[in-house]
Image 1 (cartoon, rainbow, N blue to C red):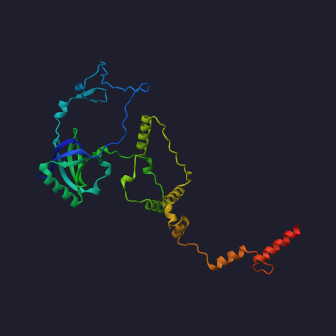
Image 2 (tube, one colour; image 1 turned 60 degrees about the horizontal axis):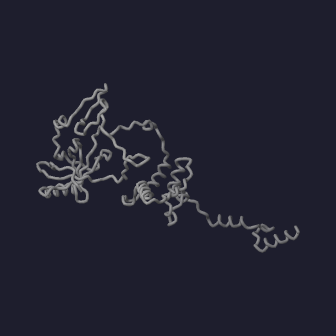
Image 3 (spheres, rainbow, N blue to C red; image 1 turned 180 degrees about the vertical axis):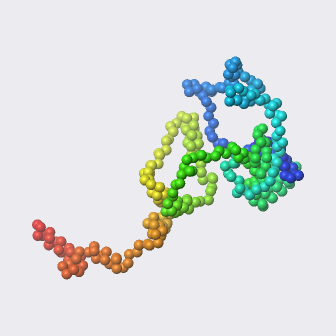
Length: 319
């Protein structure tokens, strides 16, 4: 990996020289815009909208457009005069429990490597953070932009995670938040059961980008001049008619093979919830058996042989 930033962590009076490396990378398949007819690459030129002339890169500046349409031009020299005290330092402000950090603020992650001269201080900060269970809140400027950031430990390294500023998080404004929507207790119970049945330890290696894999297969097939095999789409299940039906169907699907291995069935669960499981007593079983057997003329259950003989006599009379 190539470092993308060099500076120092300012930790009280301690300075730790470090390098930053991008911790993540996109695995998207890159495409270029081309001419459909001959595959020629599409080129873009920087052209001035006023004189129509192509503008060299060194003559390109930043412009801020006013509501009136006028443009305020800012050059690199103008931006260089702005105060950025954290240009080459990660200034630790204070420490906080990790659970106080809202994940929506997380932006980008960077691995932090110490320079040889700062290894001891680096390990001291890393181990102290790990033992405390806290993260460090810091200020850092990357690519001419100052950001809040956190320092935390991961697999023996310090990881810097830049944060969004609070005013960069939008405020949700959705009408349903003002509605008084009632959820029945039975639905809550089923939803809780569904969550419990679907709860497993997270292993990111179990998941794959199916779309990217299919796209790569398409590209490879084009290169090799072979046909692309289109996988069959799974059969679509019938749409549930209510929220309760959807929850029941989801529970049944989640249990799946678990029911065959001794898991409770839906009827058993409903009996447990109602607290009154249905049991057939020996008397009820006897009455049910008697009802299935044909009765004799004296009201007693007829033997199978008597019933068969009576059926034979009826058939002879009919003939």
